[in-house]
Image (cartoon, rainbow, N blue to C red; front, side, top):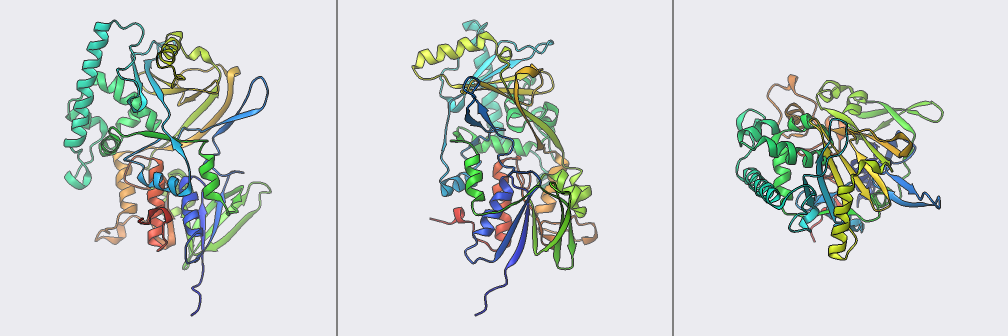
Length: 457
């Protein structure tokens, strides 16, 4: 019996989705694929924004800081957890304290108005300074009523979608329909969810309501985790045995007959090259897809993205003394080391999060208040894919199974011409790492390749 002809595959992008699909295809039990990975940077991108902190006194490199922090939860990240377990990646459930506060007109942090503990490890919640017991009890009662009302609505009041009612309901319209109080939305819902989506409040309110409701349902009363030792451990496991083509900026992906041509420029010598492949898998953001792949140029323009900064710094003037006294009280009370505080500071338009890392550094994500430039250690910038009613419709058309009768007006579908899309945005849900796993699994299934961590025990 003759051996089946091997297929050549180009994977463009080395984020989570690109590395996962490359790993799956390279480990195909039948050995049918030759995989070449392209990355425009001089290093793999999954861990490229992270930073190794240097001790101020000794000058020695110490701890690796994941930028952004890639927390995940039971209920929503089932495929991600299964992959981590398969690869032997250990993860834990660290204790975090989320202090919600506002920024004054002079961009100074105001004393927290609520302090939430991750996985509810602190019961009852800490009472912020400046609150009398009476006013604090009133606030807790109000918060409990609003929270459980919103939770009940998430389970019993389904958002309107194009499929169910012919119209797509945004989060803005959903909270109005369920009559969720504006005070709760502004001071609790938006700050907490903005830390997950890393975008402005207006952009978050434009998300399809079904995204947020589904996320709330599936993570309700579930534990949250982070990878022990940093996400570079995941990158190392997935990239083992691969020889990626680094510094290769892909400029075009085009169908040529029954194959797909990839053109790229080498960033080191500026030389341009091209090669034909049997399949091409794009693991990049929608703005990049629209730039290099002509059939999706106009469609990708309707998928919103934003640029987000993560800044590692030591400007401790950002943390008020009132907050510090609370952490000290908590550590003395429990006899354990204090949990890691994350300050969520909001103005009328956005929320920044400031993580007090145990290594005596601050990590500010989506900064909205000025930071002393002389105390900045490192800055990382990345593209965040957002969601909207229009983009949800486009994404679902690309990855849906049904084709309309009018084929002339039909949008390009995933896999047409042996070109595939993978990424956190390539599914019908929040743009998270779970989307990377779901989209990579979809391509693997289409190519009849077994996903090792999805095998039934």
